Length: 400
Image 1 (cartoon, rainbow, N blue to C red):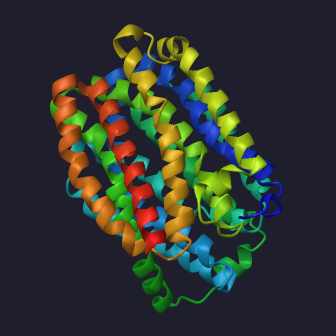
Image 2 (cartoon, rainbow, N blue to C red):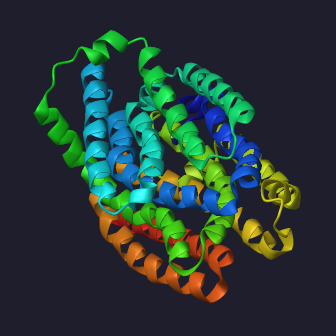
């Protein structure tokens, strides 16, 4: 069993690193009413729909490469690896953008291009380096300053133009991405590296192994808004999007925690991890936040969506708050047991089965139960199945 000294100051680091993710919950709560009042719920739903498409491209181009790079920083020249990770993400996101534009209606191309600035910003974002160097406070200050400033500008100047809202989302992330490179302390080394195509090829190859898994495990969540639009209107997509901003934001709060554990050493069981004081403190704090949002649900949703009746969507909202707990433990299993031990290949058949179950389940529930409640119950069931399969798979691997 691992001693708590391995996790010294991990809760402080998590709180610092979690500030941007808290903003990702608070700012939508402030921004969505403005957009809905001035642009309408359907226009907001249109943005959510295209963010779903964009989310699929982010899985391909970025998420896996960030995890791979964080795991490899101990063994590689840091500046070379970071530089080629950025290039790899930019090249992939560019290729995916070109491919995506083939399927985007002409009238929506500008909106999609504006939102795609978010993908470029994510490609430039080197948050993994700040985690490795234990400089999370600098990264959080960057995010805090830029996001708050951008929000104030948006609040003062937004006039209902939905393209302006899309530009606000995209440009904010683009500026954050550039800033993480500039303030990393390794700016010159990162931008001065000679291009090594072999390293990019190796990153893509390793990244694709996790991308296949991530696409199967989390890709379906980006399909939810697309499936809702298949049966219903942009208005229903918009309502689901408002609820998703809260429960997905809560799920993302736990992401830095599993990444911090990734850099702190290996452990074999969740029970060992749960014996650590720092982990218990985090779980208590996480539980308090979710319970608070549970009781504040009516106030939050009626504020975010002022023209809609809360009772119609209250059950969906309450069920959605259970999802972050499931996601937290799934992340711990996937990142800290499988990826840390180079067992990614064991995850593929597991998530392939899950994806095969997920898509028809979502279509059926959304069609039968309704867009919002069907989507939330579908995501809840799929995430629960995912967690049980991860637990069982790791148990079987340890026995072997």
